[in-house]
Image (cartoon, rainbow, N blue to C red; front, side, top):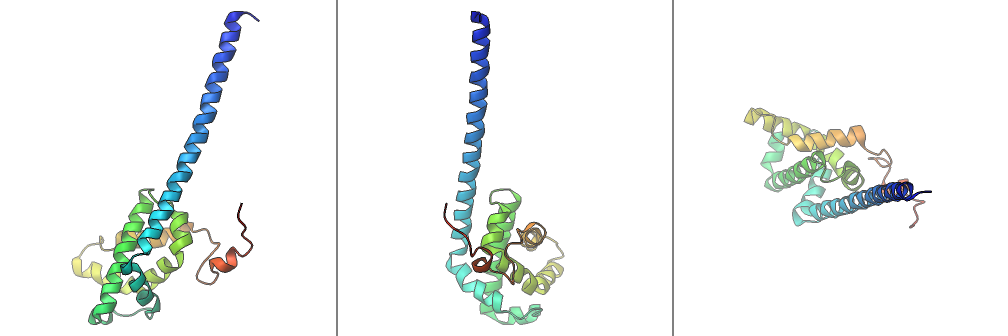
Length: 169
């Protein structure tokens, strides 16, 4: 083998090795980003606004009228807090800052329940403002969770059942 051929083989091996390590690094960076996004999602829900509000919204009767919601200052505050938080999470998923599967795994149930329970209120808000912008990302998020959710958990099968056979690596 002459020196020119040897140099070409060495160059090709160097390029292949570089591409391989670049792919590994890209994969690691994506995993790091998803871990940070999951942590940010957890931080968003472990606030006093979320903790105090989620319970109110989950226990609301389905189809509660906007007038009933607005007549109860504590419930109205809870509804608005949940809507604002889910609005931000919805946009974060859309912008691919937080993966949908992270939100679905952590909050899929409350997203579904909140959307079901707050639909009349959201529609009322849109009619009052003559704008579709009210809580648009919250609605979008709920629709994406329904369309693309993992299906492993839902309102009838919780994580404790779906992942009962889980084990650490």
